[in-house]
Amino acid sequence: MIGQISVYGLYLPWLMVLAFGALIALWAVRRLLAATGLYRWVWHPALFDLALYVLLLYGLSLIHTPSLH
Image (cartoon, rainbow, N blue to C red; front, side, top):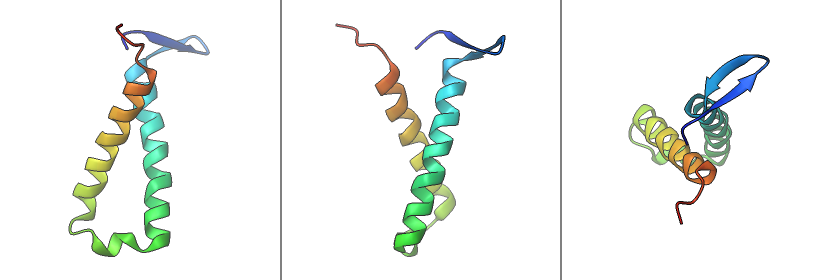
């Protein structure tokens, strides 16, 4: 996962790109949870959102990391 991506000459680390992707995914999941009413069962929404963001970022990093086999 070490590396950079060039966006119009601006080099960004892969982790920043993945973090932005996880933020977009978090936004979509939050809207889905709010629409279905599942947020009523969440004790502390801010902690839940943080944990969900970390899990999404971890999942994206696993998808984009080449296998070490």
